[in-house]
Length: 295
Ligand SMILES: [Zn+2]
Image (tube, rainbow, N blue to C red):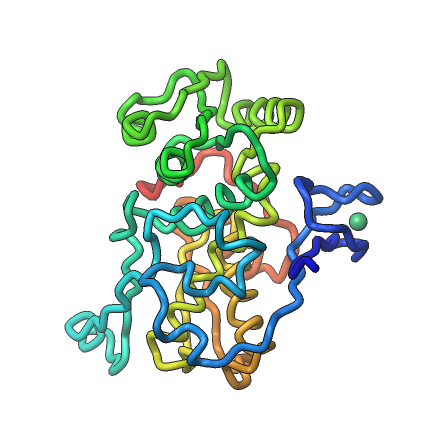
């Protein structure tokens, strides 16, 4: 009996877990739903030093399908000097730059590539010009998958050099990043290729939850008062929120409702922060971002 199923975020229709990400009825996105086993703090205590230690809370059914490059369990470092400067006694920084491909994308990409193996797909890929391409390519290399990176034809090669060094195949798309995304979606769906951030998205976002699991465990199963999260699309913030709620559901954490989640965006590109300040649910894309924080 499978531990997970898929559910439409909009109309709540349930589906068996499969290579599928959009609801047949309303075209809403599908989220992973779990039937969690009994878990306690000891479940994870003597496990591998990677985010796969939280296997029961992730959407892969069989451990034999895990494609791991030992990402996660990154340091939660107490920032004494910065904390003093800001007047905070307990300021911690989660350093995800020490993951194997140097970014937090090893979390979602690793879960998506593992799930692609479980689905029996023949290849994986992504639409990306940077960190995600590297993370996907590294996991593909480990899992023995061909990896196709879709990106605009005019990108600087330095941006995908790391992915190419892991053996990825670069598919240059004449157009913008949005065009590359659209073509990756079409080819992924028609050829049965697991595009991690598109047709594998339901499972991909689950990887980002492991950030919450690690922070909670590293704080000895306590909830931080305030959590500041850098936000692009908001996918990681959502996933982290889901992670803490799930720890509460399996009784590993007490009430998480007092925790404050803070979305941080750069001044020159802050559509979600702007919408929030205006108390609006409509996020208006910024046409010409003015920031060094490219992604
Ligand atoms: Zn639906």
